[in-house]
Length: 306
Image 1: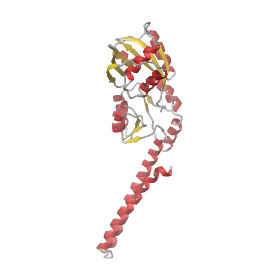
Image 2: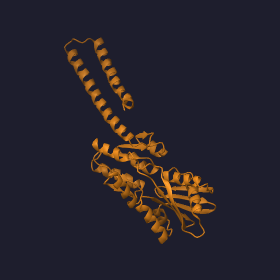
Image 3: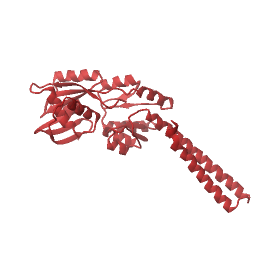
Image 4: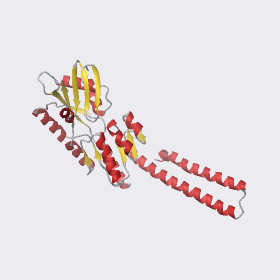
């Protein structure tokens, strides 16, 4: 629902021996091989400020939480407040106030801990896609009855985005397994479920959905491989094309069934009366097959019609 190109809005150092530039540099060292919009934002900001990135020795992705990295002989933890809580890193009152402030502004906080001590914070903000509201309204008009926004962000940030989009049902601070559980919950209620995502955190839900749609060229490999549909565009309006093409495909399938049944029924009736020779029957059968293929080929022109 957001543009997917966040920007760094704040860099704060909480330790007397650390400067904001150092916080950003070590955060970039952790993110240098990560494939995530937040990582891209940190790396872009570091490059724009001409800050040298220290090399890292090893790196571990903590799915849904952040990164654990070794750099300059130090152990770095970069990620959400949940990651630091899990690793039992003490978060100061000042840091907590910054986290709350960012979340109220619909921004995402990344906390950096070095050797078990919190040293800094990076605030990032992403904008809602300008076409998102219109696309959601159009999907509702086509019969999509229920929309649920799932995000790993804090409830405050999630609520701000959901309100802007007009989404009344959302769940925040969800992990990959939580997204999968939501899909299963909706299935148990009798819903046909489509999941739209672009990251590794979305892969389990994409696989479990009736239809998984991977968005954008920036989507991770695992998301693209898991999804049923991969869109080579970040434009949410392409979802309307998927919906439209899917509906047209169903119409064509029904037409093909009707055409095949009608031709075969006529052939049986005429043949039973002795008025249909074997040669004419063969021609009629193959002609119906050609007609089905020709009717299906109309789907190729769908994009040209738009």
